[in-house]
Image 1 (tube, rainbow, N blue to C red):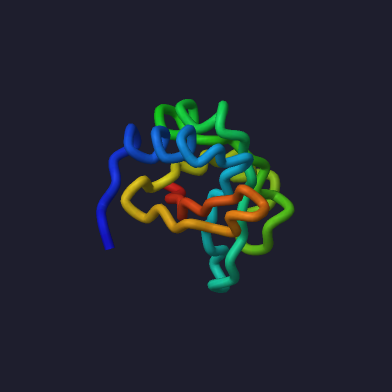
Image 2: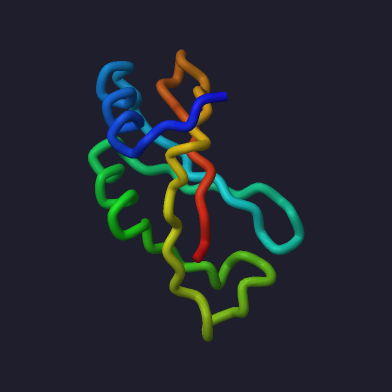
Length: 94
């Protein structure tokens, strides 16, 4: 498995005409969750993260700690369903 840089991931997304990217993460119970973003949102995701309301996800502390940022990890790129134009980037919740 190769470690990709953010620039390489963005180039791949462009060249392969990826239609959306799933940023995957696990909740505190180990269940996989994901957020789908458009390719145009990927540079922002790498620089500042994608904000989301985690209050609907069990175990994330309700309204007190509900605004979180998901940061994609470019070293974990996984090709998704090419027919649907999807790719997956596991993310980190710092």
